[in-house]
Image (tube, rainbow, N blue to C red):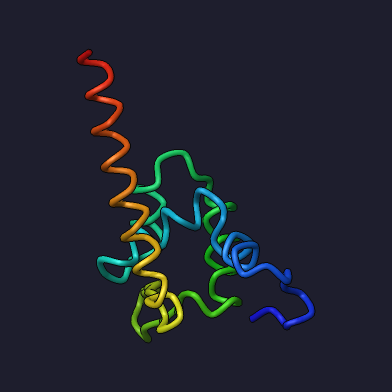
Length: 113
């Protein structure tokens, strides 16, 4: 997790710093439903490179937003899931989903006029 000195004074800026890129938001969107494995996320997030996905997952794990569980199997199985802190972001994403759906309807209505 970041130290208090590393975080901006503005709470909105803190949130944007932690999850404010496209890929992190989409990873959290997926993890709201269930734990995912790396390859599942990579296939589902069209256009993301393995390096970017790895960097995002490591960053979110370091920030305490997700957990990484390694299962002692052969071959090793690793799953990513929302942590308790990550779960606390659920209302944010729910609101974004609701807003996005409303926006899409508004755009569709405007096109019909």
